[in-house]
Structure formats: C-alpha cells, structure tokens
Length: 289
Image (cartoon, rainbow, N blue to C red):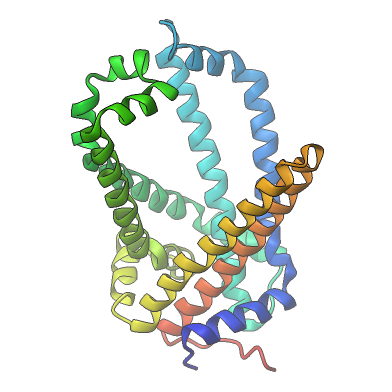
C-alpha cells in the first residue's frame, strides 16, 4: 500500500484514536524523570549548588560537580532511550496490525534502547560541531574565564548590544546552527526507526535513513514534521504565557502544555513509523477496516 504524507497524517490520527495506550511511554517517562529528579535533588543537591556557585565564585568542586551532572544526564538519556524505543515499537505494531499493547513497549524498549542510546549520542556529538559557527563570536568575547566572570547572563546580552560585530556573529552563528541541526535531524530521523524495527547497527541505520531521503514522500514528510509540531508546540507556548499572566492558573497552563506536547510528539512518532513502513514498501494496516 502506498500513501502520501497527507494520508499518513490522517491514518496517524486513526491509529491514535484506536490505541490511546500509545501515550503510555511518555507518561511513564515523565514519572520516572520526576522520581530521578527528586532523588538527584536529595542526593546530589549539594554538588549541583556548588556547580552553579562556581560560576560566580571559585570552588574546588566544579569538576566533581560536572561529573555528577554528566552521570545524571546519561541516566536520563538511557531512560528516554528505553521509552523512545518502546514507543517506536508500539507505533510499529499499531501501524502493521492495527493494535498495540503495553507489552510492546517493554519488549521493544529492552531490545532497542541501547542502539537508540548510541544513535542519540552520535547525534549529540555531531550537534556539538555546530559550535564552530560561533567561533567568530568567541573571538570577540575573549577568554572563556572572562566570559564566565564578567559577561554571564545579562552581561553577555549587554555586551552583544555594544559590539555590532559580536551581535552579527551571534546572529549568523544562530541561523547556521538551526539550519545545520535541521539537516542533521533529517539524516537521523528514519535511523531511529531502523534500529528499533529492523534491529540493525547504528551505522546501517544511518545508511538506510539517508537512502530513504531519496524518496520524495519520505523527505517531504520530514519537512511537514518540522513545521507541524513547531507550529503546534509554539502555539501551546503562547497559550501558557496567557495563563501565566493569570497567576495561580499558571500551573494549570503548564499542565495543559505538557499534555498537549505529549500528544503531539506521540502522534509524530506514530506518523513517522507509518511513513517508514510506507517508504520501505512494507505491509501496513488499513485504518478504514
């Protein structure tokens, strides 16, 4: 069965309606994140405080604090990889059979979380290369220590306002970084589905993802996924700021924003799985049945 991007998006809605359990991975991930954050605050709070304080005054604990923050980040990344792989597995089951279950999340999560994690690490490392776009800015700002001591937060903004060259260097670097990350994300997009659904290596998954971009439907779908969630989530952000102005209702607005973000991202995962199967010309479930 062949479908264009619009049909994939429409079928994604039908899959979601029939399988609301697809929200389970994000809900579970949120709960685990809250638990980990509470434990981190209780056990590592002193080190985090030292880390933040080290920006304003010299401390001997900055490297240890950085190490503990790194451990915390890796743990969160492993957790998100497990639930991300689980959601892709659930989406694959929904797309191919019309239904899915919580067991699909645990099965695919266990099987694919490590490769999902490796793929994410590769994306992060390559993303850091975008710092080269800010080299002209760094040259204008001076040394890293000087930046931390004199130009942190409001200071750096004030400095950019005074230095036209620094301002334009920042603007150019920011735009180039966004473009670079969008292209990089496009190359990685289908790789996440490949490592989970096909259980291939990270390198083979990236090769498959790049080859799928030659498919106009698959490439066009990625463009839609860049625009659609961005519009919806940013629209939700405006909604949040409106609630924030109402004081106590800000918490309610934040809750609504969180729920909408989970729904939008889950929907994007479902549609991505269906487009992956369509681009690979594999059997998919007819949602009209």
